[in-house]
Amino acid sequence: MRRTLSFTFMALAVMCFAVPVFAQGGAAGSATNWVAITSGFAMAIASAVCGIGQSKATAAACEGLARNPAARAHHRNKQRLAGRDFVADDYSIADIAIWPWVSRYEWQTVDLGAYANVKRWYTAIAKRPAVQRGYKVPKDVGEIPMP
Figure 1 (cartoon, helix red, strand yellow):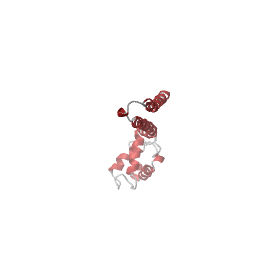
Figure 2: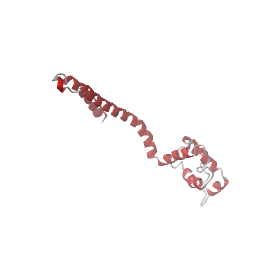
Figure 3: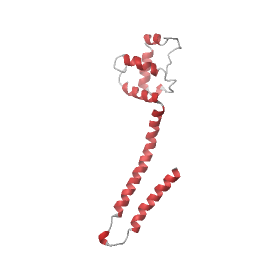
Figure 4: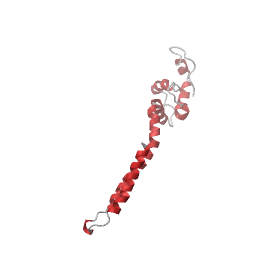
């Protein structure tokens, strides 16, 4: 695939430079501005190559978030928790609803260390006595996992 793609771009480059060479001559009244035409092709090819290069970096980040939906959710929570202690500024039902999902970060193969705001929020809620009691209902599954 890579060899075919590079051959295609090389062939297009040769054609773009060869067109002005073969365009020499002819009547002065029917002259075509081949330099402008070939520079248009060259700009299109350059844009395509730049787009391919930039897409590789962006694709890696997008693929990481797409392959792990939990990481995507933690990324959104990280942004939401920036500069605030809880999701809705004060401890609320939103925190109570989100926390159990985040507490399964090990199952989700998510490193909470990469999400400092989420980790701070998670540990603050995990230290609450009511949360510690509620974590043992309906059956005791051990201690609350801490990052």
